[in-house]
Length: 312
Image (cartoon, rainbow, N blue to C red; front, side, top):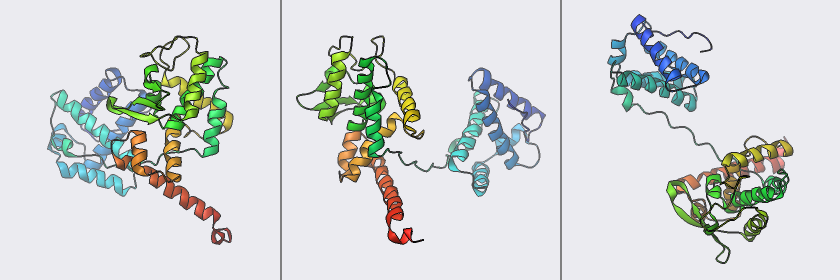
């Protein structure tokens, strides 16, 4: 670890903590940074539970109120929910390890649940940035067919709202140009049919015409340099290069194109149920996050454009 961390523990408990740290580092193969974080979180917990050094019997005797009191103290410090979740995760890890090693068992810790994190609003690109990505993506690769491949993939993300994993799992037989639909395998291997825009089909056709490998039914549609199914990491790297080239923020990722698809459909008046079907969301509540994005955007534009705001 970076620096020695002090624990509010007696000698026996301190020795046990060192064994837990060794297990995280050598058996669980946690990084030094992660080990440091877990250790600091456990140290904070022990310091809040009791002023005098704790023993193993003290830990075994802790009840639900003790754990909840700790979370309340952390919340009073204005600690954000993500930090509180991380701290509780470290504490739970330690207690589970104690139980696994038959050192002690405290059933109260399993009753405590982490505070719910605030849902992060999806990050979407505006229309100009989305079009710029599609325009430039094919010019990064030196090999023409790979550039056409990347453009076809991004068109599926932005034009059909696919997850990157869904786009790259498409097989040749999943495309039906006549019916203008694409068969997609989403989360939980659930299949859905997604409308295929003419531009998306044109970009796929252009790629297939130049691809040096045979693309037979049942085989992957999008291939890497050696003829294998392409890895998501390749597309992520391409987007990263584009971000630098176009001066775009780090929030511009392959998934941001999917968010842009949904946000822009909503802005054009598409109903939530239709967007839910297109995105493959199991729950409508997941899709409803996009209404929050629209509200936030509307509020920002309102404040920027209204004459009363400009007069301030």
